[in-house]
Length: 443
Ligand SMILES: Nc1nc2c(ncn2[C@@H]2O[C@H](COP(=O)(O)OP(=O)(O)OP(=O)(O)O)[C@@H](O)[C@H]2O)c(=O)[nH]1
Ligand SMILES: [Mg+2]
Image (cartoon, rainbow, N blue to C red; front, side, top):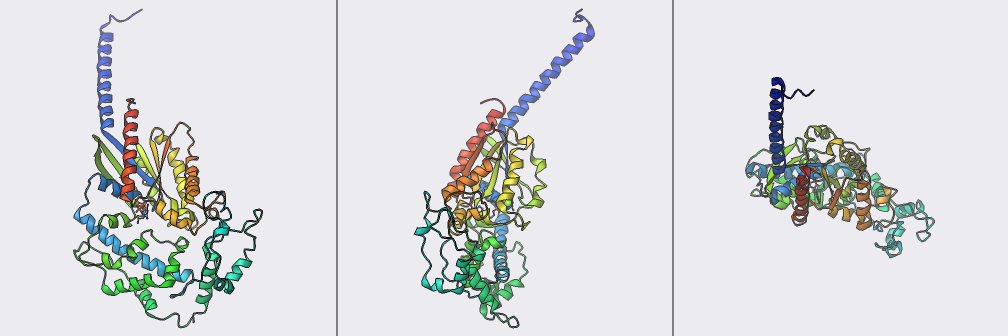
């Protein structure tokens, strides 16, 4: 029998209606709040360019840098110069390269797949000069690599830089150095000075590197052996802004120097605490979280995973031949693929837009001239070109997505190039805004 007439039932119904109205009100409030804000995470492994993209967002959306930040960037740039000089000096010893070493001519990288489609074929590659062929070091290597480059069934083994004639010649020259006396000369003295440097910078205006350190860093960078060592940077840890600042030491070490936009974008500071930056796009507040990408930092990510509208996941395209800063046994690209796999399939990101920034395309292009992808990713097929390489790596990431419904947006980016990033971020904003609308059923 219906109990609609009882007093208790009427009270209970009224309470339920009030409660439901309250819930509706609350939901409406939340929807409005959701529509007003979009939470965005910048994710990726270490040194992939997350903070650089955040700097670009700040420049583009007018979140100005404070004076303290400018001074912080300037200090970071001085430290970048010292760090680079120290890394190069250390690598000269570990790779066994003498100061003043001039590498013999080394033919460009042998590409067993070149000739198919785009990219120069083996037959187009400049041949070794007679001088280089007469070099016993060069003969050792060609004996170890006897394939006939014209025989499609027996393609030559791609050669790693540490085994090429220049590397062998460097080691031979290094072996001739008297172990008692070592090398002598102004560059060696400069290296000894830099090795002993232990400076920290505060927030003092006009503070710069001492003149003797500036001169020492310039001498090191100008040495032919160090320049050769720089070409083998994938064999040790060297930050990507090395050439940018080392080529411009006089300008950035001037006492009146304050970093410009391009300097700020190139300055390297490892992120060790998560920051939130807010700016408005078409009436929506974007809350952007920049996290540290190295293994120890990734433990801090999870508390930021709720209610994320979009993830920009950064990949350093040029890292395919590098090992991780925090683990010399892990390839950087493989590490990035593993982290992407768990992020893109994470249950909390079911309805989160995933935007993949295949970054550092400028450095990727340069690297392809001397480093074969197939040496590090044997499944790579085809010529060692930008088109093939970028398509291959993007596919490696996309195929990790286990949800066919999920759309992953891919952009090939150059994070230090404001013009390019401005265009890409406009497209990204559109994706985020429409995903914001879709999240509350308005699209
Ligand atoms: N040439 C070039 N350099 C880049 C590019 N993207 C980033 N860099 C440089 O790479 C270095 C590392 O970039 P960051 O933005 O600090 O990397 P991150 O992902 O924030 O690194 P963590 O904070 O350690 O996780 C900086 O010196 C940047 O200037 C790029 O597309 N091209
Ligand atoms: Mg960072």
